[in-house]
Structures are given as C-alpha cells and as structure tokens.
Length: 275
Ligand SMILES: [Zn+2]
Image (cartoon, rainbow, N blue to C red; front, side):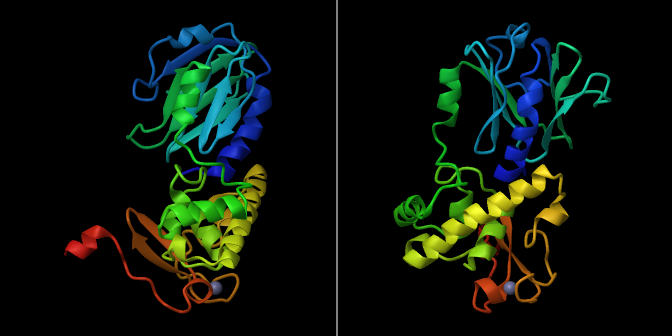
C-alpha cells in the first residue's frame, strides 16, 4: 500500500499538470470506485483544479472556485497517473478526468477487488472525512509523539499504523522506522523512555524523508526498503539475517540484533492462539 512518501511523491508530480487546464470530461468512473453520486461528476466539467493536496494517504483535488473537492484514496492496489495528450493509457480506467488539450488524470486498480475510492465532496464534507485522522507523521516531533505514546498503551508497530493517532504510516514504513529507531515492534508505547521516544520521532522523520526522496527519483520497492520484505537478507547495519513475524493481520520484518536484543518474536495472531 502506498504510504506517506509514495503519496507525497505523487502529489508533487500531479500538482502542476492537474491545475494547468480546465476539465473537459469527468469520468468514466467504475461504479465501485466512485463513492458519491450527488453532485454528479459532470459538475466538474468546465472547472479548473487548484492543484493536488495530500492528507495522510489521501489525495485531494480542490476546484479553483472553492466549491468542490475530489478526494482519492488508492488503498493497496490503486495507482494514479497524469497522462499527456495522446499518451497510451488503460482501456478501462477505474476513474478518469480529461483536461483541455487532451491530458488525463487516470486511476487504475490491479486485481479484481475494487477498493480504491473517489469522492466528490464540498470542502466541508471533505474536512469531515478527514477529521478522524491524527497529525501528519512527517514532522510530528518528540513532544507530540510522547503524548501519543503516553495516552495509548499499544505495541509500537500497531501504534505507528493507527491513522487516528499518527497519519501516513503503514506496515512497510513502520518496519523501516522501527529498525532505524532500534526499537522492538512489540515494545509497549507507554514503557518507552524519553530517549527512546526521541529516537523514534527522529526515525519517523529520517525514514519518511528518505522514502520521499527515493520515490521522487522513481525508486522501486526493492531499492527503497531496507528491512520491509527482506526476510533472510543481511541487516544493513549489523549483518544479522532479517526476521519476520506475523502480528494481527500484518507481517512485520525486523532485525533480531538491532531491535530485540537477539530475541526472536513469537507469532501473536489470534488465529494462532486459538489453535
Ligand atoms: Zn541489525
């Protein structure tokens, strides 16, 4: 799933092109992708977008007149791209906007499950959709993180991924951040020392900034991640083979030497406990 670095890299790419020309055709949209029906998409035709904005893992495209906001959530398999006039695109996009001059904003989604969503909202309704989100992860800082950790007794991997607490981090960047912070994914947030909270806050900024820079240069997953999806590969810090453990519905990657004092973490999925 694209997380903050991926979404922010896309936002920066899309900001100029989507605001260059008015929309001439809004749609087609897959019935499962477009989540709103009133107002109809056609109200966008003739209007110009002000640019691309981002909140957590969502992209927002407000109209220049301030009347509408197109909100896009790509979920795990959605991808969004600006195609130049005449550039070949998918035969059946999940969602499409065509601009004057022939440029297109195209959303595609691999696989059969259509989970990505597009909402056409008023600015007030868009704000309501986002109100449950915690502060942006990038630039959060140690003081805000200390408060979140003190208020919620949670395992760190789970806390970092909870969008209500901190917005923008998913399982891949949680793995990268905890490795850089040299903290166990199972450590309890309420048991961190001030020094550990500071380390974690620094790791959040360091890793998300590193990810954003790489994604802006077009780096793929294998080049971007150093821990996530690297089972058995040597830790780039200490050389220990990286380990993997299942936790809730997620798979965690970590270094047993750098993060857990040599301990191998046990599977904590409920389904395993019930067996
Ligand atoms: Zn290591």
